[in-house]
Length: 377
Image 1 (cartoon, rainbow, N blue to C red):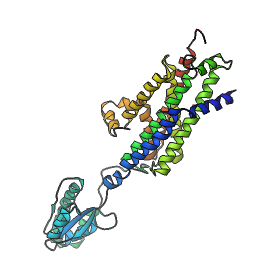
Image 2 (image 1 turned 45 degrees about the vertical axis):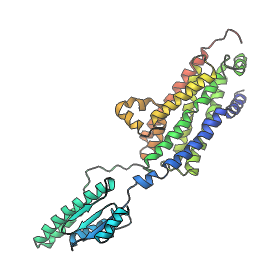
Image 3 (image 1 turned 135 degrees about the vertical axis):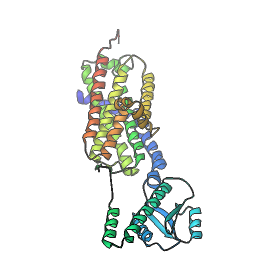
Image 4 (image 1 turned 90 degrees about the horizontal axis):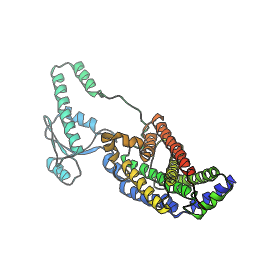
């Protein structure tokens, strides 16, 4: 009987228009739009690249020549240097082909056409070049070549006041958080299938619910079969969503792909449990409960950062408890932790949070469902 109920509950879930719309078609459309909007922002604007600069030599300065040579070495050099005369350099700057002009004479001076990150970096580089040149020049003036070599060695050392931490960081693109939140939205919108489980077991909601309540089969079997069928259907939709984003749109989620799928399926079960709990409360019609539940889910998505990327950071500063209890934020944070940290401790913390929410919603949903009595059927 359990397998019979499970089979038909699974069929009913897959035939729901809300399931097809919100859990199949909408993620594909929104994911495609996100890809178009955010797909190349990080690589074009945020990822560090060699800064193009024009160097104008106003006099011979061997020390500065060696410094610039070191800064421009290799494919990932700090500077992408173009040597030119002053007129040509100004044309390059005016055309936007370089971010600044360095006049290399007795000292280095910088000319820029605006303000920005690249210009600030160039200003710092020029300042350090002048400091290094003065130190090396003073060492050369002593006539002790061993001292000169010692000074050059010390200046070549990289001083770092920070302790290195080895994150996973398979994809440091900050815009991938929108895709994390998209997966979380699909998961939490699974509450619509959980809502169907709750309302289809209530005699005042549908004829099917009335027949179930008249059936000799224990209500717990009906509910467990329906919940399992909904979780399987939701799990399939989560797998399809992640697969589409990862292999069709080529979104690099980083981390362990198997754990990503596992977390996505678990988050789908959380959405179903939330819908089951919400549908078990009160005697309002399915349409009203559906509208309330969908609106509530979208509010949770907003506070997780789906519509406004920095809202989670604002909440972390002003009201950190919101991120800790928001199930959508917990879901998206699990994907973030899986990508950014090689240590799975943070990821497992989020998984435990999801499991606790699932257990809480299911228990409360069962309690509310068992308390319903009907005068007649």
